[in-house]
Length: 138
Image 1 (cartoon, rainbow, N blue to C red):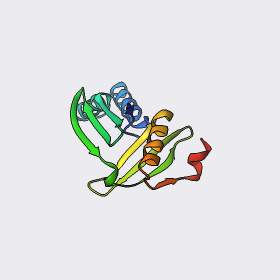
Image 2 (cartoon, rainbow, N blue to C red):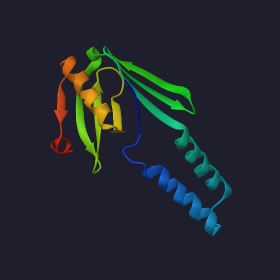
Image 3 (spheres, rainbow, N blue to C red):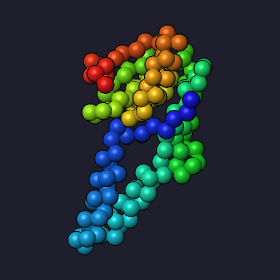
């Protein structure tokens, strides 16, 4: 199963950049370089996507920028130390996949079905799972 996931636990960062850019242009404050930097950052965030694919024998995280692969990482169950399930905000969940090699995989604001698939993946491969108390409330 392949699902688009959020790279950020909140969409507040792009919103703040947009507000900053709008207010700065409206008031005529700042320099042209500042506007250019904020606009470039906003365009990059708009084209940045993360896709998590949960297969029978591995997890694959693909990060794309305007449809081109920037980073692809395959993790097999042997390299996973455990999965921590947490809450991200009031109504969404997130997970941290702790790996032995490389950095951990952070899954922020994924759909409910993605979390269920991740939990069943962990159960199938008998991976250690850590649930926060708040996670079970949702």
